[in-house]
Image 1 (tube, rainbow, N blue to C red):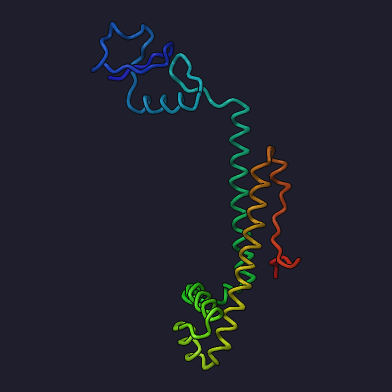
Image 2: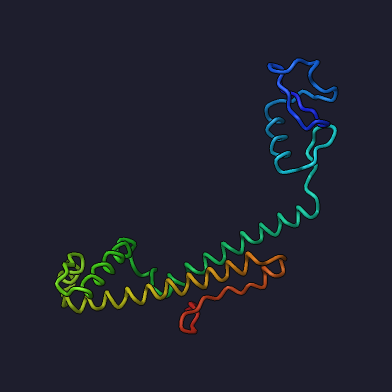
Length: 191
């Protein structure tokens, strides 16, 4: 059996401790209460004489609400960043399997730019299936790759700035004042 002493803030196990070794205020507890008290002690919560955990103070509640509001705002920051990218790139009109080729297309186009003799099997196959000039496709893939990298870096930087602003926010009012609008070249992502 497990016992708890509020006076000593200690646990005692009857398999280890004799009853005579335990303080006079020990109370027998079950496994669930044992875990609950361990958590409460680690979180520096107050425990009453009946071993009930005293609810958060007003300050702790304010901190909990502030942290909750920050989580909600961070989700908004992240979702709006992704939405902006999706709109700018036109992802709603492009199947996922094709998007999954972009990294390889970029790699091949970059290698071709450095060395025109470099092999570009993916781009070659796309050009063949589309019936377009391979070098024009390589050049277009390189241009789009660079534009996409700039877009991602710009929005990633803006997202991180919003997150930094959020982390510095000390009040709910400050959190609510964060106006999340992503822009590239002065244009927002709304259609």
